[in-house]
Length: 496
Image 1 (cartoon, one colour):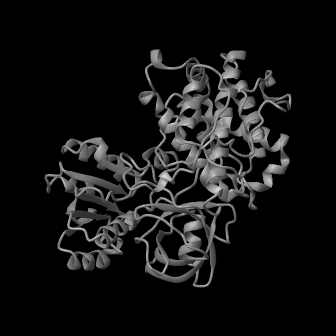
Image 2: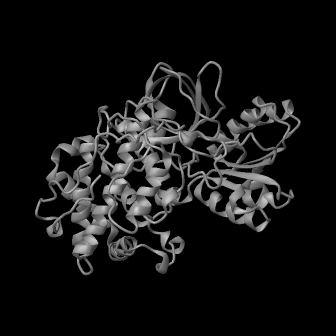
Image 3: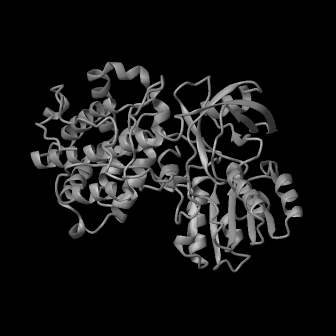
């Protein structure tokens, strides 16, 4: 795509922006290019998995483009070779790109804008565009709430046709779209992470019916909001840097969605077949998708109920893939949790829900025989149970150590299942850690056992457990590249 040019957004009040960004409806194929496998499902992905948890905090899903309520095509076309998208961003960091093409995506963790300064590349290594992006970010971060409100005001005033496409109550959506865009822009120099992050967003937003023509409206209002609240440092060069960056971000997402459209539906309908209330606020729900649903143990999906249209929440699969095609989830109802309360207290067998695509790389690498050290807190035990079943189905003889944490003994709602698995598999050890009885947090209890130097660690649970767990595991000698966990940045961002 030719790098667009733009005139000043007049602090977002002119209503301009027409024609400054024109997305392709589908990726332009390279000669001889072939569709790459979906790397989001690869079992050998190393490092933090970046997957939201199934813990008692209800998960909210970030969005980077408007989520329409009806399905639409993101455009069809042949995906490109993986190196081209990375080359596109590499080119962007030194000069405006002539064309961006991106195939599929894999799911990764992106730092949040609020915590990215510490992990950002040294200033001397940053590209000119990245320096301008970060200078603007430094201006708008202290007034993030105002920027967010103004952004949505621009979007809905200039493009009122988009308002009905968002959830009726914006308190669950309010800052996610803008936060995702700013996070991606601020890390424009981090080619590998950025491309993978945006591919995942592009793929995931197919379920909203997001189309290429939605992107210019979002970009126009993004520039308008930034130019208003970064007015003290705003310049033509800074605006041009943001336009180039947003152009690249948008095209990566558009191309990823087009590539994914060739091999998977935008969503699956699923019928609830069983609904078991384990505690007054925890339910185990099993559903039957309307068509085959491929996934890996340890992954998660987004879920929408008929009672709250256009509001999606993340839940991990609570079992490995089954021969009967059924899927299970562990859901805890939380205060003011619209989706979780509906699933726990209102849903019944026969109800129909919708599922987004499977995502997440917190999966088992079956090419090695390293032991697995698994920490599951609350309903975070769901993906841990799925991975144990996965090891068993592969004829595993590798050691698997599970620490199952809960506040009270009642919160160990799935302990009987885990103990039955332990009885069936001598390589599996399950230890229950109850806070009120042990007077210590789950990560601290791990110190009493070990050594864990040769293990790959998996953590799933509340944000505080993830943070302290990572620190504890590093302290006892497990290197960071052998620790896989939920995206702490995502958990912190919506913890409140």
